[in-house]
Length: 134
Length: 159
Picture 1 (tube, each protein chain N blue to C red):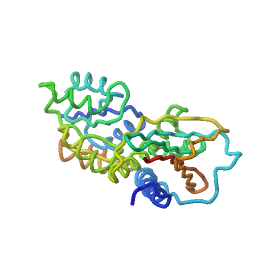
Picture 2 (cartoon, helix red, strand yellow):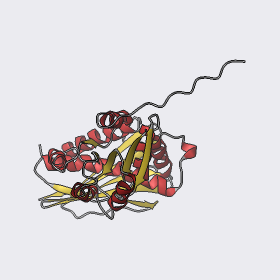
Picture 3 (cartoon, chains in turn cyan, brown):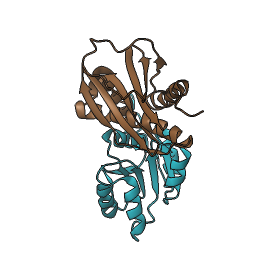
Picture 4 (cartoon, helix red, strand yellow):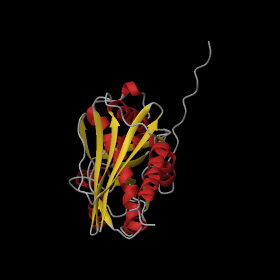
């Protein structure tokens, strides 16, 4: 069964970057553009892992994570947080929120795959065999 | 060294900039003495506010519309011709500005000026200046990426 990944980010560009990083793997990607939509998607889709941005309108990533951890049905879903801030205080702060891991922007696609691969099983898509020459 | 000193602010921006452009976008950037030309057309300016108990300011990323589209293409890994409309380009510039601001914020926090950053916003236009109060440090740094010129402007006041 493909791994279900929920990507929550208000930036469509960042969601596309996450999608592009995972396009070579057997993944089903769900997307949400803020924490409120992310919580609804988490309840509906029960993803295997959530990639969560911090700064978002409507409901930010920290609030979404807090609500996720309060929900007995969702609290065990591992979360990888995306942050633009690499400072010590920020890293310590988000580490205490109950995340599984974090990634500081800018990041490379391989870094995201490596982080997610430590948490869930990422299976590379089979490469279609080349057509036989006539 | 506290990043209120001009040289340190420049080095702070340069390090963050290289991380974003070379690390994520695979675009080589270098300091430039040349400014964005007056005939460059509409500029796309990403801005993020910085605020804390003893610090206030903002960071601005000034790019031409063409370079903004190139940034969008590089972020999405698509040819320039496939870049979408203004919203998509604005989103990419916002995200790059957010990453630059995140780097500045981290450095300020680690050097004893805890602060937060705002959500990014975009200004588009071809004839405007950002004015500041006299006690605010204002650094304008010019860069080049192949044939494209762009500017990063940092306004900072630390009490």
